[in-house]
Length: 121
Image 1 (cartoon, helix red, strand yellow):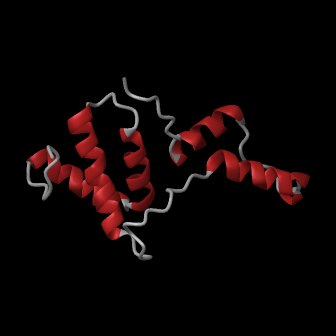
Image 2: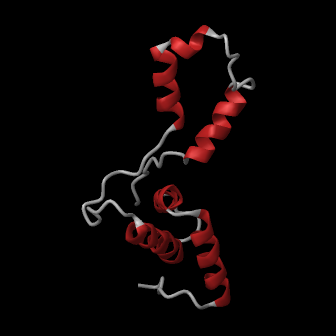
């Protein structure tokens, strides 16, 4: 029986929840909330998400990590199925690191069957 893993929502999903919770997301320029540390800390905690440190990628540049997590996400979906929730973690990480035009191009290559990685292993 698989263990239930809690995967944190993506930054985009957090932003959507925040917008629903606070319909007037933008504060008035004269609002005293701009100067409250508690407000800033709660916004950071509620909205921001960062991928955890991965010892396989100690360098500053994240190109290899981006590609590896993109492949890991699709490999997880292929091997475990689309509804397996822990796969979302890999998606969160590659969406955090990868530029959008890279993933769009890789999605095109996947659709054409020319992507340079195998997902069945």
